[in-house]
Length: 352
Image 1 (cartoon, rainbow, N blue to C red):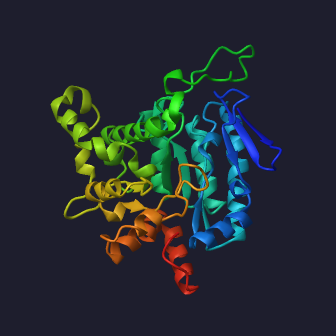
Image 2 (cartoon, one colour):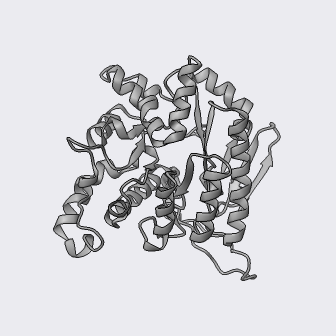
């Protein structure tokens, strides 16, 4: 469950499922919901356009599917209204009830046709079901058909996976409990999140999803988590234990990375907070599949979006432009092309 209260200083505190009610899960400012506040922050940071999506705690995959759908529709309607009110400044990624694939497909279709969004943001798993699972394949197939961008953000992650407890009322999900080993030092967010994203990428590649859906545009948050640092181990294991790793595809994980004649098959953002990590990311995935990520407006984000990229003098202007805007524009498909045109015809900059 999510509960939001206004604190004595006028700011808003939240708690979330698995977090004791006396614990402040996160303090949020009005830039979480007020477009005017966001536009002020964008002007101060030199950001021309921003891709909007819901905070992952609102995915609500743990709830009854019809309730998850109701939350998703409410969020998506508000998101679309904000984008319509500020064309050229905001592009939207909706949310869908992936705990019911048929409902998720219906809401995806509504996002793309009725609401004019560029795609959806989803979690790295659906209540413990990995993204490459066959049960979710119809959703991803429909996303490919609709040319919807699919952005994957970690939630319900390793170290903070929530375990359902018994409920007095079987119709209402019981409050889940978090794993205690990751309670100290923000470890679930600092260690669990990158590992969770790496698992989502590895499962996506080795499940055969990208073999089956060659034009699906899918991206992963936070530089792909720990995947770029562990892809060598994953590749070695794929060949060393084909009995365990080649059960759904014979395409090796590295075959989906860039080669001389094609780019990497998936996108990641550049939010890695470290020069060496970004250089490694460029080496593994290539500039054409790395797009600016901010995690705005939360503590693990950049204070000034794009600061890391701009602070690297060894990147030439073409690479810098690609990281700040070009890859994101490509990921967003037709919406990205429209955004690019609007920014350039209005003398906008190069960094959505």
